[in-house]
Length: 319
Image 1 (cartoon, rainbow, N blue to C red):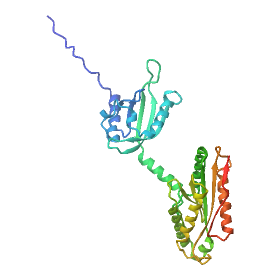
Image 2: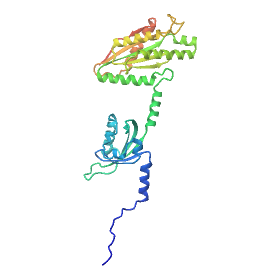
Image 3: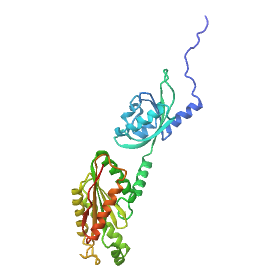
Image 4: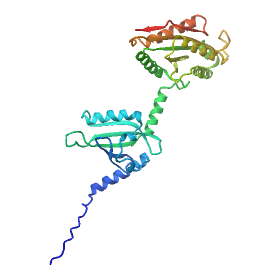
């Protein structure tokens, strides 16, 4: 009888290209993944264990929503729609991912469609994820610096303009009201000339801190409007509330007891103008500039009527 032939099957040899790809997936700082149409992971590279502090067995087969902060899931959904609908070849979003220890990191997620199902529907997607926490922190720092006055630490003019517009849009949508205070240091040029710019800068910082001390709500914004003029944005505040805050601000500066020979009371003071606007039918294109102009006129009245006082403009109603 003839000899039996060994029919044991052998695994196909691993190509050099496959070896290289496996090494890249293992050692790359980026995480490479394949996501099914139902948004579950069918594959994720070993580098995920370093990035997310989770073993891959806790990721494969699980839905992506388990790992992304809930309020950022909308970004994932929008990006997914762009890709699977064919509106874009790929998408890139930055979201917060929950690590195995519960901490959060910012992750840039790039996604691209790989294939289609038998019915022609969008199939699997190739996803690359990268930790961009350091970049995001730097961006946030630079943005904060760009919107902050370097001398007083208050919001700067650019930030003031953006916030005023944003708060008015919110006021218009809610058909609510908001108020604005403009405060100007009385006789500051004389003070600066008498004591020098260094003391003048110290004075501006002290006044800024005094104004910050009188605002009580997180949404209130104190800004350096320009020179020795400062502003306080009071969302949802009516005229009465604005008058109360204005008087507190005036008194807080007077209570600093900064010597100023050029002032009638021999101490540094501020004059404050306040204005309030209500949106009854969604507001108008003239706002919030009209609110700013109204507060400025009230400030001029306070200056003309002896300084170290507060004056309120007639409330505006935008229809």
